[in-house]
Length: 166
Length: 373
Image (cartoon, rainbow over all chains, first blue to last red; front, top):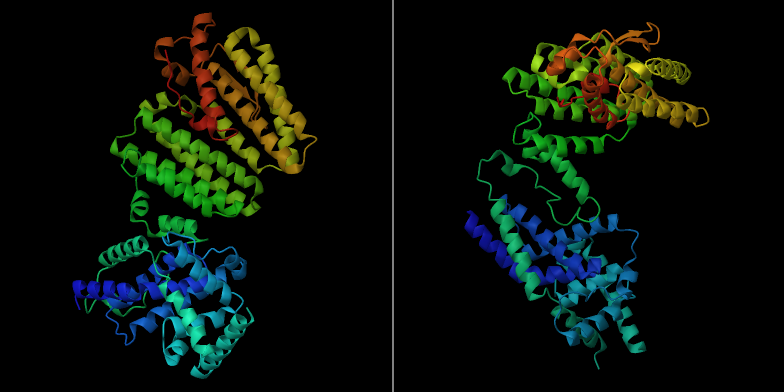
């Protein structure tokens, strides 16, 4: 494939999946600016694959996988900073978001799931927000489908009980 | 009421969390630029099967390692910096070499050993540049002045690092610097124009003696260094006091300040910790060396074969090189005030150049001065 065709595929992928990857990154790093940088890096790596002429069957899942790996690297380096701390300071919505009402909504949801473990949060995001199949989630997170099913189930219950309680 | 549905619907509010339009546009244009810069690899390109480059740029290292990446790129990846490595003074890339490459290399020389070694290499590099310029006939007074100033600062750094470095390294670094100085002396001998510009290097026996003795002090044990330095400073004080009448007041004052300072350093060194004491002794030795080189320009110095210290000065017998470098002030051997005044000016400038690089042993061997006549 030539440069123009690939560039077209590349930018279209970004238009389609940029926001989803960004959300995933926000969940992972709890900081909007960081998540933007990370999103850019995910797509940069994706281009590296494209330009090498590598085929991929599921672009979306592939992008999530890259994002997940990047996040792992990031955690290795950032062990000292507690995620919960970041969540509590409300660093997620900070940024150039124009609509305060909407921001409050995100914050509410994020607060609601704030107590959940990181791995529970991310499966909820992938399953219910992004609507990914269990199998894809399992591939992205490098787990068995069974483990993912169980995790989603538990996370849902936890969230539900939290909401009922409130 | 379907609780589960409610929960998931609730979560779906998050799907409105998106990149803002401006961020979206910015990232998109960054990515497109990246894509255009890293074009598609054509089939058959040997790299096309290679492992995909990871850690591309923006994210993975951004937070803690970026400065190191930049430094690393400067050393390894920078075509410019690499090209600059072969530059000589007057070349477009030469400032990159001295202002970027060398400090970077120094930053990566973590141990004192590595630093000493590196600085000695840089000294040798300066000499090589001078030689190259000389071959091309581009070595003028201005360039040689800059070269020797730079060389001296690296000598001082090498010396500083050597104090803390391993004995073996010290010996090899000395060897390197000695060799460099020898090469410089050869160079200077062959170029009379340069010799005039650099009176300290006129390869008179006195100045090389000074250079050698100052270098030699670095190899000594602390005790020997102390004994020798004390001997040199005491001798010099005596000689200077005796010759007071023959030296112009200006030069005398200048020398006196240095000797007093050296005296003070020696005194202080008695009560200090070993490292500081050694540093101060070396500073004192450096000052003594400066005074010796000043004196050796004023008259023929008689040196003690054991310590290299000047024990007497024959002011009626000015070294020929000195006359050569002050053409219109020739026959300054007489002590008429005006003539020595000229010499004094020259010497004070010389001392300033030397003084600026502390106790650099090679000071007297390479200081360069524009003599005003």
